[in-house]
Length: 277
Image (cartoon, rainbow, N blue to C red; front, side):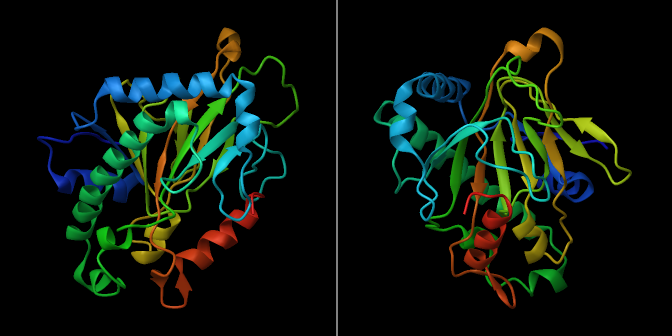
């Protein structure tokens, strides 16, 4: 499996879409988001996760905003929970004041980039699939209250020994597309059609993009959602934390992603499957 590394400013949108079609993933470099902003967001949230204040922001099961404690979630089809804690950021939701300004700046910068990428994707859909969309892809995310920036912390592993427990078990994303600024450590892997796993480049400054299940449904499997995971590090790296912060692009709740299914209905179904709703 060869996930293409795409220069945002000089590579063709067709190359980006071909990588998504072939692998479900693409990696962007030379984009408009500054490394300084991304690093500052990581620094702010590191302080948050290592403080006791996080427990004042425990998540709301209905709204899905706030802090999800360690081992709150399991991947679909897995009974062992993942070795992670995380925070759900929505512009309308609760956000720790110390992180608010720079985090929302990142949120909206990623959202703006995502709209451009969705237009690239739509421009490269076959005509018969394009005609089946309920509306243009980038219009689906306009003013969506469900687009989510998830701040993830994977703690050091030396104190956790449960057999079969991993940082993130194999799964597919729920949404249209995911934009993931490079994590602070390696670990992300994608699965090819023969069942083999491949590491995804996480060089600083890169943004990883992947297809979610909603885009898969909207495009009638022209773009396919690829299984991926975050593996446990080996050796001394077990004692290091890992941070990542994917933006999950969701349609507005009423948008139809299939003739008989709205985005809201599908989201609730999937959240129940992973144990957080």
